Amino acid sequence: MSGAERIRAGLEAAGVTLAASVPDTWIGRLMTAVRASKTIRAVDVAREEEAVAVACGANLAGGRGAVLIQNAGLLNCGGILAGLVDLYRIPCFFIVSLRGDVRDPVYYHAPKGRVTAETLGAWRLPHATADRGGDLAEQVRRGVEFAAESRGPFVLLISGEDLA
Amino acid sequence: MTGRKPFLDALVAALAREDVVVSCLGANARLLPHMNVTVPVFALCDSMGASVPLALGIALSRPERHVIALEGDGSLLMSPNVLATAAAARPANLTIVLWVNGHYESSGGQALPAVPVDWAALARASGIASVETVGEPAGLPPALGRARGAAGPAVLVLPIAFDPAERIPPYSERPEEIRARFTL
Image (tube, rainbow over all chains, first blue to last red; front, side, top):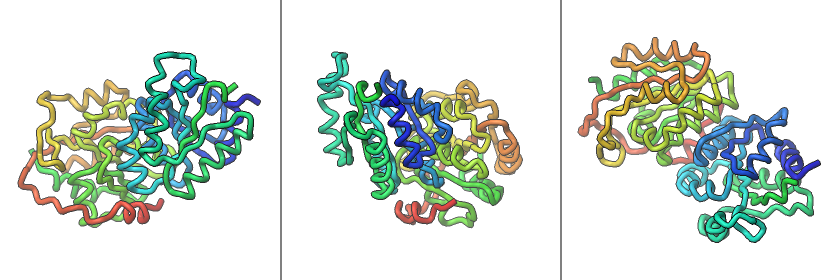
């Protein structure tokens, strides 16, 4: 089973019913695996703030929504994280591709990589970095449960290597 | 041109048991708690542009409900992409009611960028097949009925008069109260 399939298995095990996404190269590969799910509705959106709202809508409706985006898109989401997720205390689980760290060979992602960790801290976003040497599905399931139980956000950072 | 409240009265009177209302921030969100609304309402007090995708997530998750998103022209101008997203997802149980008064009413009545956006054309160009402009409150219930019967998401455009003297109550519910009361 590939890393992408293990992540999908974690989403399914956590009862995720809807995954809203704006793709990048890595998230696009992950979404290919998610689209094969029989229990998760994949929703393609045009901007990352939309993905957050769509996922929150699923949660308000009794389902479980997830947001799959790049870190550039997460940087777009400060307003809606404050004004929807935090203000109304809605669970919102994110899988975010961490572009621009030392594992990313593409130079133009580096500025995003330099500010992602500090932004997560400044925005007080609970987060973890996926460990592909461990149980990826369980890491995803725990993140979804954390969001549900805390009625707030949780961000799981992934790299392209995690999807192999 | 008619003001907001007669349209809102007509909309509330036309709501059906299976309906769910999601309101963008501003006058509608502040007026609805003072009206006799018998269906679940999720009212935003922030997050411009979120009402349509929030309603979309509810609609896709609960196909037995009809979700009505109330959106303002200023809010939609900030994120018109939500129309294409809704069109692509094709929920037949989503109606977007767009209130057009050319002003950012909740922030003091500043004018929108001075360009006459054709909202109905924008919705159609974004892939929404069912689009109507409703000029009078009496036309809203039958238009909502047609929207309910559409094969995909629908948009109803309501041109309303901007009245800087309109009496709009303050937000009377806290977000946590709105969240707690919103059950489907």
